[in-house]
Image 1 (tube, rainbow, N blue to C red):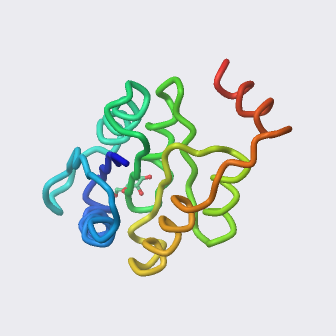
Image 2: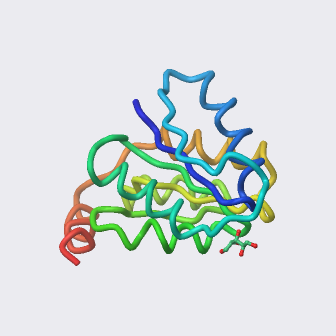
Length: 143
Ligand code: RB5
């Protein structure tokens, strides 16, 4: 599986930690930046990750900013993206099971690194349930 990962400065440290964590799994990472803790604007990074997933360059994406909010909004502007901000294990499970989220977002100033890695694993390991949720995801995709 290929995962595109991107952050702004607020999510940079978390991005670097998640890269190390995901490298232990059978995952190819596409790092779309940022490359340091210097201040940058999150919309470009959320968009880049969204486009990588939407155009098939990556199977899924992970985005990080200070809260996870701004960069998730940016990713969700790209058609075909279903990006979910997750702050706990239940959200990580349900965004896969019910929403078929293809990008997960974390806040580097909200969620500690170990927890974010745990949530990313849950999201990656939880299948989409389909059934009635397919109709809802189809409706999202048509917007
Ligand atoms: C940057 O200071 C901060 O606003 C950004 O990382 C993010 O939290 C926005 O949603």
